[in-house]
Amino acid sequence: MSGHSTIERRPSRRAAAVRPVPAPSAPRPRRRSRLSRLLSNSVVQGALILVALVWITPLAGLFLSSMRSERDNASAGWWTALTDPSQLSLDNYSALLKDSGIAAAFGNTVLISVPTTALVVAIAALAGYAFAWLDFPGRDGIFLVVVGLLVVPVQIGLLPVAKLFGAVGLFGTIAGVVLFHVAYGLPFAIFLLRNYFAEIPREMLEAARMDGGSEWRIFSRLVLPLGRPAIASLAIFQFLWVWNDMLVALLFADSGSQPLTVALQSQMRQFGSNIGVLAPGAFLSLVVPLVVFFAFQRHFVQGVMAGSVK
Image 1 (cartoon, helix red, strand yellow):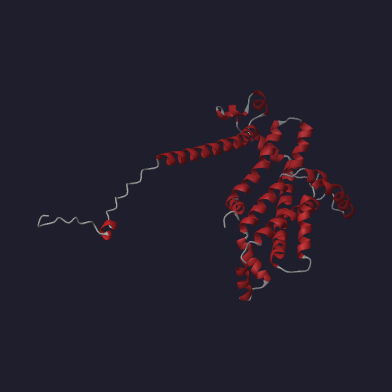
Image 2: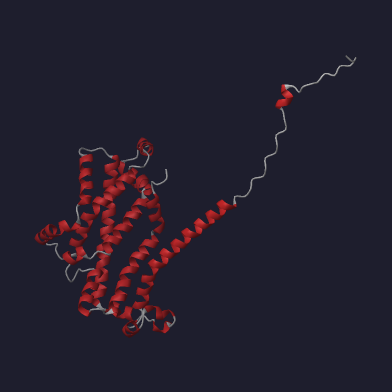
């Protein structure tokens, strides 16, 4: 053996354990996911635009037809007014509003729709709070009866209610039409608001009671502001249902209390296909619900989305 023996040194476990870790590679841009996301957004937007065009086209056609004369409507389609604006005028609307029957029917529609909506919302809000947070005998049984009334079609109650209104002197009056709409609108309204009010945290109501708040104060200052989206949605639906109704008004209203839908139906029966009368009347009947809907659109969307996200 040689004097200097060579000793092979092996790396210690600590040295072997501590090794340089390779730096992570920079993340590559996910071009494929971005492209798919962009395409999906474009497809959704294109579909929404297509649906909007399909929905707006008949409305635009009705509006342009209502501003054209009878001769222009008979000779060519409404789209010709887009290239020839001289066809458009307000003569049909001025002639329609000068008609005492149409003007009175428009006023009757307002007198029927507004009180009905206000009564349904007010009574349903009180009943919904009572069914959700007040304990009284027979609460669950009464609520089941209210829910059961949802399946009763309106056609079943037309004849017996007509006989009842005739006996008490309400047949053929605006009050009779309002009472019928209120009676048949309450079951759904109470069901909707009761379920919405029941989602309010119990601790919030208990804290208000601990502070000495009465039930009326809790209802008016706490529950109503929290339930504004659902109340606004209910008000919009109820107003649209009553404003566009013709079946109930055709049976319960006479010539002096008929709404706009019945008046337009009688005009169509008298004058046939007189587009100069029907088009402005139909658009006048349509524009008010549109204004109401867009005025409360924000609350309506909140009411529809309420409860979908915890």
